[in-house]
Image (cartoon, rainbow, N blue to C red):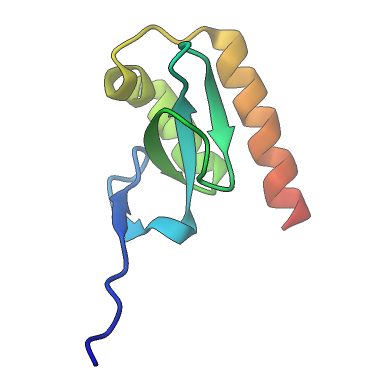
Length: 92
């Protein structure tokens, strides 16, 4: 039997290819709302980042999320996502 293929995605922070399950998904809904998707099931366009604040900060500084979603992202959205990420990494 063939081994199951592991889906790989690139982190927008460190630009490394990693298994999809190890990454956190940032999603832009059809309505244009941008949020974190820890489960990976939300509707919309997705981009991936490592579950670390370092990679999130790198992607934020280089405006990689804005490039991935082809839209301007407000600072308040980044703040909310940053808080969610901190809570998620603290809870484990």
